Length: 88
Image 1: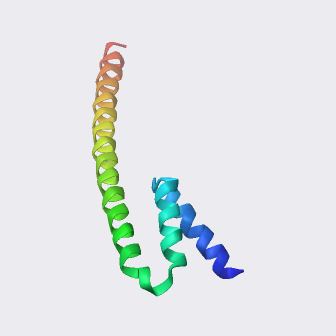
Image 2: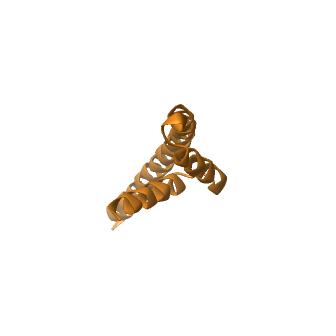
């Protein structure tokens, strides 16, 4: 039972990281092949890991751009509010 839960949790992690169902099925098939398929599973996971890292880095670059735009807008608001406060 615990092994089944761990396996399900791992599959959910693969899905959360964007692995297509086809890839998950391929991994499951290899897993059923036992020790003889460890190298193939390792390669499949390494390819997926590299893809996840590329996507993560792209998201982080986009997040940085959003952070910069928020900071810019906050400065504009502060400048505008500061000017309004001086006029009063």
